Length: 133
Image (spheres, rainbow, N blue to C red):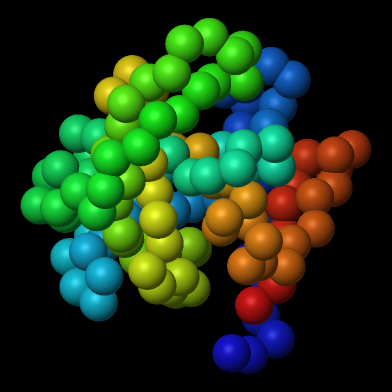
């Protein structure tokens, strides 16, 4: 790794604006990836979530099934967990990440299982997030 920084601005698709990172998903070790999507940085989420349809396009098999409960605490949802590589900014590859298939959502949510592997600064007033490699 070098000492390069990667920055992006907050997304105004959320109110108030929220930190996002450009992410691609790939089968572990594979070259083919999804298109770049902006993933919400969610320090309150235990795990990382992505639309199941997005994961299935890469023919990634389910690693195991589990139950999850949303932040609202409603009933449990049965979901598949997949092993993927995440590529940030088109260059930083995080291998063998467990990701939950989300049958209801349309966004990627980066939870602490990914965020705890990264060094980043969020500048709320400047509405930027900078990832330090």
